[in-house]
Length: 539
Image (cartoon, rainbow, N blue to C red; front, side):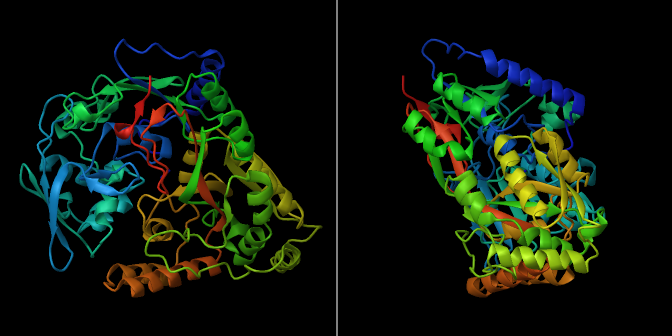
């Protein structure tokens, strides 16, 4: 899950916010919790750009949104799908028609949540005017893609309200993973009565209406987002935490110190190479878990001429010392990646790897130099390239290692550091040469990773990888009911993309969090979803 058009923040404003945040973190203290209430001080990765579920795509946004909003399905404490706004559903024999029966539920302003709020949300995310970076996920609905391309009316999208409490979804192809997919924020309902009244301003705290366990109270840029328990939530009596403050904490070491001082109860990351130290200094706090996430490099093949050459992309990818990065630099359990889909992914057929996997680093470096020479880049005329990266500590350490590896094969490399939101805006607008990023699965299926490289994906296909044969294999897998055959088709697609160096996988991530032992209900899981609804804080 990874920035979105509205509300966009100007670079100067973002820089000011970062300075404000640093100042705030330097002298912050834990705010008083109202008498008799339970409060949670929650550190998240970076400042969200929006809390509009149809426009969000940052991990930090999904953390807050998952506490404010709820889709047809939602997450158990260990991130498995369970009934959310839908209390039950049925599926047609061909797997194409799903009928959901909604529970009695209200928006935070007391208005009922209806099937029409879901229909409205799905049409809204597919509306080309919304310019949602995640519209491609909703292509699963009948006519979703042509509607998003302006080739079909939004009314043709396969979502209709049979009555206020019955929603029918018609799919383009069978999707047994749909209950997982419907947990994603792109499938949250939208309060039609509020969005149509306020337009884009509906996400401002004074206007915001939610249907989840919490409601938005305030958002002080560079400081905190505050939510309180939503009394209209259908299980409000089972929610322990009364108030949550979310603090953007891009500086992982500063966040660690705030945890030590008791200013934060939990933080969603820590600096990877401090893991062993943290186990000594904060025993019982540091949490890691195998993750459905891949860290990788994207090559801008649309605008950067050298990167259109597969020989250059291969030379750059194969010369990175993934073993050093994972075992010596990061040291928190990350595993070197020579494929793109994490092997633990459900429905995955292990096997796809880069064509050069298994060779020693020395052999790879020698071949990389030869490939660069074939492409016309020599010590006298070196390849010049820029890596654009977010300025968090782990990313900078990682990219400095990549920079050293590329210099070892004669590449002239420079690093461009940006605040996180600015870096992702640049990736989305193709204002980069090589970008550093991680992909956290939106749902537990290989397609959550492989769909990134489809030609129809749009902005999140950062490297603009395009191959009709790859698209055809994914389309064939969509129609394949036999799970083993489907896995084999997806495996062939991944192998094709890797053979063309469509991206450079670096390592498979682990989840990392600092959690005060007073916090209960925080369950480690591969999807890295931790909804505050399940948490409590011992007094």
